[in-house]
Length: 304
Image (cartoon, rainbow, N blue to C red; front, side, top):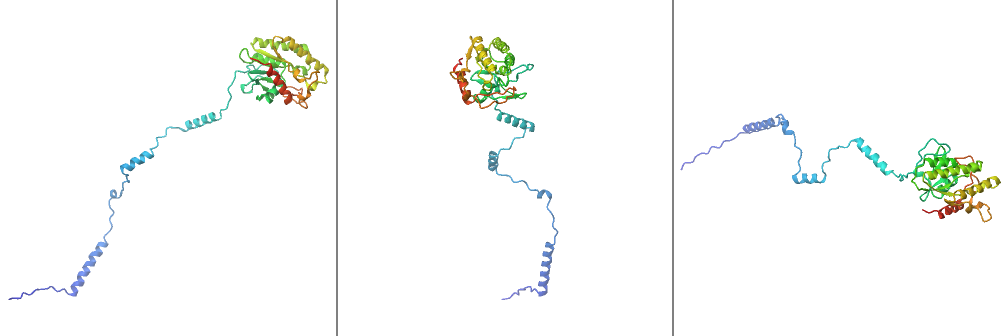
């Protein structure tokens, strides 16, 4: 039996050290390799996309806004129109207007918002009816050339001025107009015959315009009770009214401001005279009691 020798390669310590050195040098070479940036195309990242279901859900909740086609002037005009609609509290106008601007001693800018009415009956008069319309009927008034007016009721209005206004007022035919006029003419000391003539012309003009006058007598003038001539002139003028207008409706408001003996009920008047805008003569107006008595007397005699 022959034994075969097995040769085993014996590695010396010098060889091991050499092998370890080569291994370290190769690893150092790998670590010292320069860094090369990848191509630019590889660095560009695509935007993340949602799954189809999520994208559809997003579009359903918040739809994309449409392109703006409204200009700034359009928006401003819409806002201004809204403000106008929001602040539009104007009243329905009526046909009461004055068209002339060439007369004197009267006012010509009647506005429907300022017309003095009792129910459907326009009022025509001076400061007495003007004050009654303001305090009891809550009619508005305005100033024209510093003179108060409410419709055909004008401060300091004379009979002749009332006739001029009736010439130019626009009202439907057959309109019944309540008339209380003449106190200013008497306080200014005009002759009675001239006052009666002007009153006839006023009634004639109202008939020409196809208006229906509802005449009231003049109330006593509380601050002229000491003047016997003025008191007599008022009584004579009221007598003329009853005779001249016997075919018309006449309401005697004079009788509701005196007692059975003909003495003036001063409890129906204010304490003292007051200045007015349309006349230099002061007025002693009716107080609450007097205004109510006059108003009830007129309403009790009105009919359509």
